Length: 173
Image 1 (cartoon, rainbow, N blue to C red):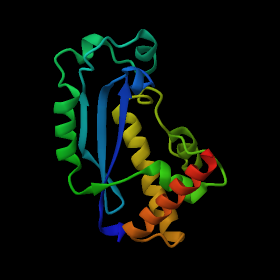
Image 2 (cartoon, one colour; image 1 turned 90 degrees about the vertical axis):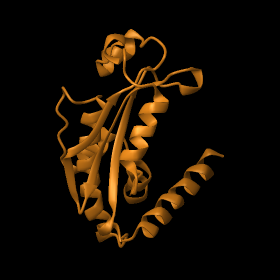
Image 3 (cartoon, helix red, strand yellow; image 1 turned 180 degrees about the vertical axis):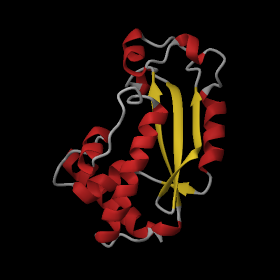
Image 4 (tube, one colour; image 1 turned 60 degrees about the horizontal axis):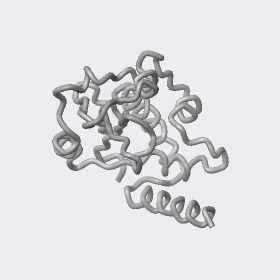
């Protein structure tokens, strides 16, 4: 049952939006949700040295500069730490949102936050930790919606997410 699982909601900030062109992660954060509660005291948050300069346009969005990531772990080390933090937890909010609210076509964090009345303080928006907390709040609301829709187990949630993957693939043709 979903009510018995641990979830980790996470977000990253990057040097840009094109990983195939060399963009890299500069920050990763995660927040645990257990029994429908956000465990704010157990958050994960780290800068990541991307091994390349952070473009000024990206810094203007997330506020992370080259100086801030200097000496931070590389993605391999940050990934190991984050993987350890996530052990035993599950989640994919975008696919679940698409399953629950497919008629809207709006599944961004901003759209979901607005739908559930979650306020994201401006100074925390576009930070990995701030967006993780906002997504966790959204997810807690989604747990109630899933329960009302008869999605009560991880298997139910995975089946709904897979159904959305199949629909999206079909739409791509």
